[in-house]
Image (cartoon, rainbow, N blue to C red):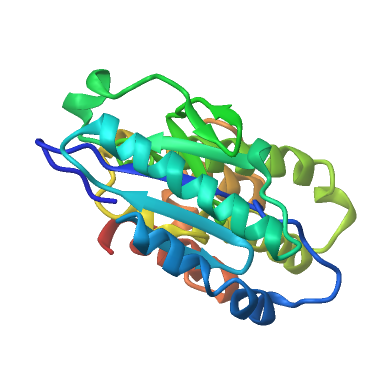
Length: 242
């Protein structure tokens, strides 16, 4: 899905695009739908599957030809699924054109035909819980993560007086740290302003754990080496040096 100056990759993400049956598990479902890869390859495209989530990728110098190939491929998949007692969920299917930041204004904006429905291109998609932008950046992922973490901290603030310190630190680690850590591979090479947003979450969590005021410095709190507090330092190291 990497982009180049002379080409415009296209990604069609069908998250939960298949009718979820009550009998087949993830492994059996992949085996049952193994023929999908043959259909995608016949149209000159690439397929990535994880359980019932599938992504179709393509790359071409001519965007119109790539869009046509993608539409024909999805129509073929829809026909195959109907013959195998499956259903393509067009409402959850998203289309995203990818390119460098400089060429984003040149990307097509016309809807793509997906199994009889029209899917307008989006600027970001969610793939297994990770948000990917059409410039392959992590701006949306960072913003969504920061928003969710601040919401969790606001809820935890009301529980501060009712639980022990160890319990409270475990809650912060489970609801905040785990959210920041999920999909942290997309955080490699983040610009400083996005790193600052992530660091603001850690600072706010440290203030909440150590009962500091809003404008108190957290340097001393982050420098304490004992039990769970050493985790603050390790997280800061992970995000900035990977």
